[in-house]
Image (cartoon, rainbow, N blue to C red):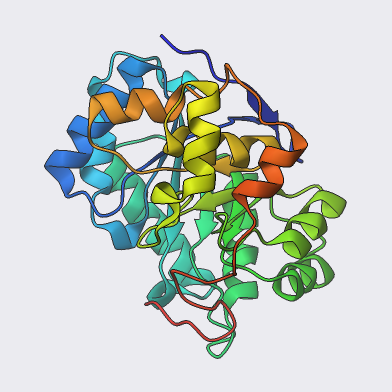
Length: 276
């Protein structure tokens, strides 16, 4: 079994340095993926209400043969449930689908600035943490300005901001802001979904030099940035390869070469994207 390093969050809890994404797996495939991932050594599992697979993820956690306290389960609040009471109710529905007594990490999935209710949701998440129903609270797809507003209006910073992050979108400024505030960066779409990244000649050369795959090079790039990548895979072989990135190191030139490309998003712009 592969051993994974951990990060300590600003609330004192720990989180593995790499996790399993589950979008867009359905319940049955998510259950199988989580079970095989836990057998491989994963201890961080990521889902969301809008992935519509929380039930399957929960079944995988329950039947994966790993003590519950060793697993970090993340889920996310959908845009249609922004608001204080709505967030509390949405969380309880997620917890029921997952079949868990508590959730380790609860994130606001998107800020939806036009709707402008994310601060109310954040106050509800603070309450959930105070009540012991959530161990850590965070956000996803938030800009620095969104996070600063949370801090100004509630005095509480997120433990995590899960953002689109890959070599086509390295997010240098936002990652520096996170570091200054003590917020951990998580990476969704860490392998640059829909881009030619894994076929890139520079990445291929680095992979050959280390005797690894291009995907492992890119995931190693994330971990050396201090970010926690969340790659999705339902294949046990791919899951193992994705996790096996802690036995080699990229030098400074290789780190630059991986990210030496024109910037582009594969997902929505947090300033305007709306996902309910």
